[in-house]
Image (tube, rainbow, N blue to C red; front, side):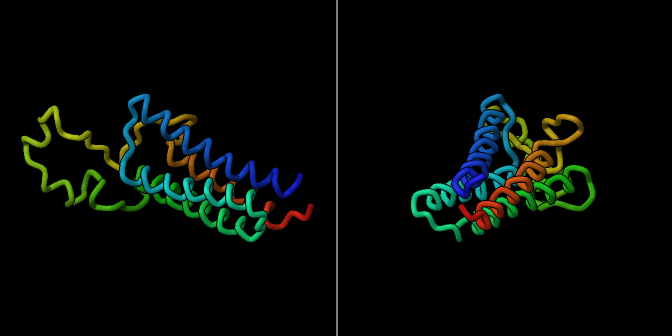
Length: 153
């Protein structure tokens, strides 16, 4: 496979994962804070992929691999928080002190934003949450980015 095809697979994979996240959001699955953290490296990977294709700079693929590795790592961390393997950020977990600032009016208001906790799984398939799937697919994208960086046409 050529360098350009690996770049398209890698950046296109991030575009597909980011697009899927937005589709789930449109279907009513509001993202938690950690879900949003996982989106930024995908956005960066898409831009990096486009720049690498347009400018022809093979070294940019290493930055794409880093972006994919970062979102995969966040996905693994998020999965651990969901499964109770370790504690997550206090600001978005059920036991976090960041929730203590809410009063009864905040919780009962129909105008208040939805409270989405990072330690609650809102959707899963084959026992894996969205964070787990992101971690897995993003790890695969790291391989495509590395192949793009090393591939000689």
